[in-house]
Amino acid sequence: MMPEMSLYNPDTIAAIATPPGEGGVGIVRISGPGVWAIVDGLFLSMDKQSVSDRAHGTFAYGKVVEADGSEIDTGLALVMRAPKSYTCEDVVEIQGHGGAVGMRRILRRALEAGARMAEPGEFTKRAFLNGRIDLVQAEGIFDLIRARSDRAAAAALEQMEGKLSQQFNIIYEAFLEVAANLETTLDFVEDELPDDVFSGIASLLDQTFLSLDQLLDTWDEGRLLREGARVVILGRPNAGKSTLLNVLLGFERAIVSSTAGTTRDTIEEGFVLDGIPLRIIDTAGLRETDCEIEAEGIRRAEAHGEEAHLAIYLLDASEPLDEEDRVRLARLDSDKSVVVLNKIDRGRRVVEVDGVPVSLVSGEGIDALKQAMADKLEKGADLHAPPHAVISERHRQLLVKAHREARQAREFLNENVEENAVLATEHLRTALEYLGEVTGRVYHEELLDNIFSRFCIGK
Picture (cartoon, one colour):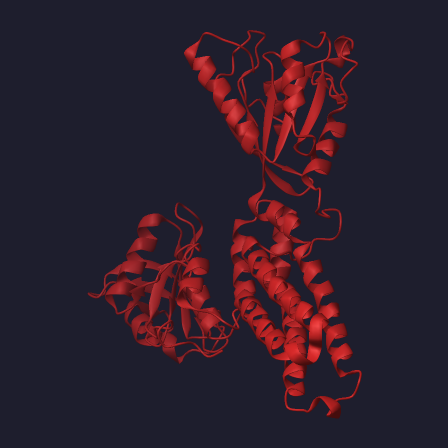
């Protein structure tokens, strides 16, 4: 699809493309039709050859200067000519010494010379509008930048390279073929059609449903890789919650004390388990208390427990099970919780509860606990298969809508194929609209704003 004029502003944009702060190198990216006039006015090459005269993929060494000729920085100018650049436009990247002040000065100079400050994700948006990538690949770039585990990064890279787009395109073309075949039958009298025409159309539609369902089945894995999971540690005071947090993290993050009620507020830390990024939350011990501060901590613990993807409930297995623990255990959702029987090095007196026996002091049972956590989190997701591109929530919503429309078309064909061919075709065309929104065959300004506004400025 060619860029819509209302969505594509062919001016020249600039932004800092490297993270803020100190670094060895900082980059200011400039893209658009006015890039040569801008860069020739602010970058003076040591060999006296202007940047605009250089070939694609070459560097110039020189200095960045103010309008009056005073020097801002020394560095490199990388030349990328259309359509071989990221945006498919003429692009120059000014690479200077990393540092917030120097980068801001170079950017300010580019803006003064005629560039406009880029909007969030505008370079990638131009790459899409110019046909370099589709929307699914653009989202893969975003996922790669935001990846919090090796597996998430590998999956995002596959998506960025177009592996997921290929699957969407196959489904789209199959639905398109079904719709086209069905529309063709409308031009014929019923008696003129071979007997197997409609059965062939129905068979192709059924095969396409299988591919659609296979993609939908990757959503659980995609949700875990992109969003991670919230894991909350619950239990009575001195059950070992803070110790468990420290053991999982591998360093002393929470204060551990034999004094009950030491943890009064939640403590959160990031952790990667079996390729899944987690946010582990240590909470206040669950008990009756007259202390307002501790009571608020307990209220927060219970709230986190209700919202978490996984709850780890710790019991002190060296002591008999009390009634308060019985009540709380009965409330746990077995699909979203793991019970841990801690302190088995002191003997086990809790026998009526099924859980993972561990000793957080000796380390016994920790591997089994991690496996139990992973099994619960990976339910519905095959995270032991090789990393592969997986759908996002946006993809899932559109696929569900397309699936519903296609299913309605199939039902019409089952009822009376000759009489309902027109209605079935309309539903298939609607399904195609939803599928087209996934990759960007069909797009509108609100859709693009929703996707690219999440990107950082400079990407």
